[in-house]
Image 1: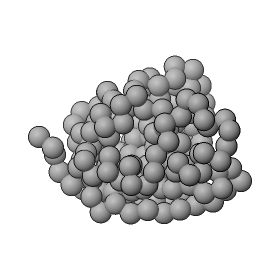
Image 2: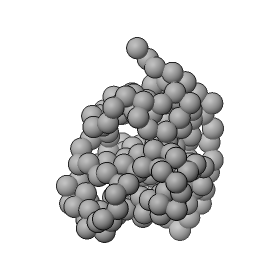
Image 3: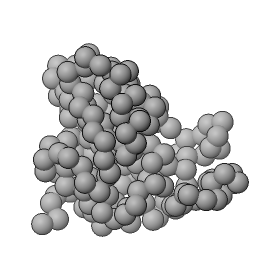
Image 4: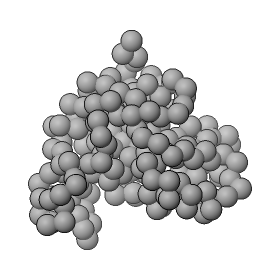
Length: 180
């Protein structure tokens, strides 16, 4: 999932990139490694878990182009249109208010910027007994609708496979403009 998302970001040397729900930090590390090899990009990580933020602070200490925040996707602590690209992997299931979260991502992503959301679609999550509780499951159409309602267009889908999940989905789209 992380590899597909990383490839979909198509990072550029001066990109300002946000990862929401970075957890253990694998994808965050890949993004940061790429950016550090580039000219002047910046990386921002946002996670609801204080423990994950502290773990990432230890893991990536001394990286001046990384900013880490503990908080929710519904209240990203960044200025409007300050991000070029944003991503979230295996995290949308836990957003308390997905409409507000998607609107907040649209607020911080500049027009023309990109969003990549990678997740296991409902039909995959339902295969695993552990996913019956505590997960809000989504279909491709539901996440596409959330993205469109927030102001993303040119949304396209890419599927991937792995050990578990059997099949996952990445939806990416371009920020069309401000919603007012």
